[in-house]
View (cartoon, rainbow, N blue to C red):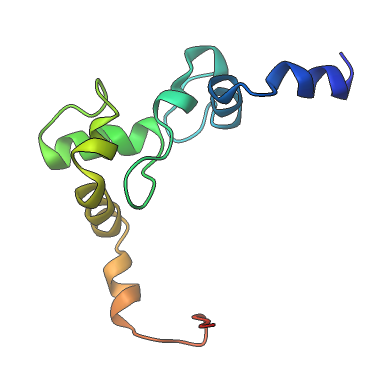
Length: 104
């Protein structure tokens, strides 16, 4: 298969693209499982990956692994708070403006 054939086989195929790009990462299965698409980024901070959805299910008490769209429809802000909490991002935010922050 040539590179052109490969790119054409993925053109306009979001399920196929996401399934391949996110395969075997963040707790997702291989590309045949379609986990990459099922657990794609949702919510205000784009929660992604089966591992994150599984941990978020425990955090929120509702099964977002079975119904991932809940992250976008019911819990977009809660998923962002979860991600900040579970990755200790509040401590970085609490440092305030640093030379790593660029404003335009």
